[in-house]
Length: 372
Image (cartoon, rainbow, N blue to C red; front, side, top):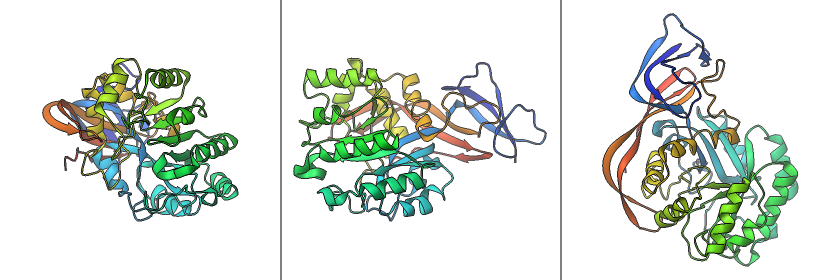
């Protein structure tokens, strides 16, 4: 069924003056008009490229923390997602067959450098020693899945690597370089120290949990560390929110934004241990970043035009004729709510992003923010 989208306010898209969007029977943006198209009334809400979450865990049943894709995807306004390291080489085939190839959203993955991935997250480390990494098998999986693997993931924090320190991150970086892929690195408690991790990164790599607020593991620990992080961001290393259960601080985020360090992307790190709070969903995470000082246009860029190309999707060019329709319809509403960060600090939020609908191909589906 062809669609005719009307009554919207464009944001994050290159098309001034557009008041109607036509979607043909194949689900592609069309020049129109199309006789018999179903009218989709956006009710004067914003319409942006489909929201993209660069860090989720959606291999439900394959790890003990992953949510179902539907809990992180279209029902909450998100049309594309990256599973950030749930699977390593040993079981990536399962993630692909049962999640990536099955779901309606666009799904890509960062392959965990640890062979077992997050099957028993934080109970059985995927990086306790060298036996946890099989480089040859990792390359085999990358080559067999180039169409869906968009990077390598490593968790470089003390609770994962123990006395092994920065070595797993160095191995992951070398694998990423050889495979010509970006590295996503989880930063947290030492060892390794955060500057040891920073020293191995190059433009295009991604630091997730960039505003984590952890002592001896945060960009806010010292002025020198913050200056290094800001310089890296200016050079093209991508700072990603990755809110998570223990990795986002209002104070760290506000100070960084005030001092000129803006995140490249806003992601949730959504999983079973934080979906009921403090994360909830993408819209709540976006609302938190708006509340700590990130301007509206940058919030939208951080969930659309910046992360989407990492998945092979367009950014601002989503209205080009022949492009698959991929949009999120949402409002920014006045609403007082007490939000909580990962450290237990609270903040009153007065404006909330509320997803209303997603359009993916020629399918329009309602969306909403889940509060509980």
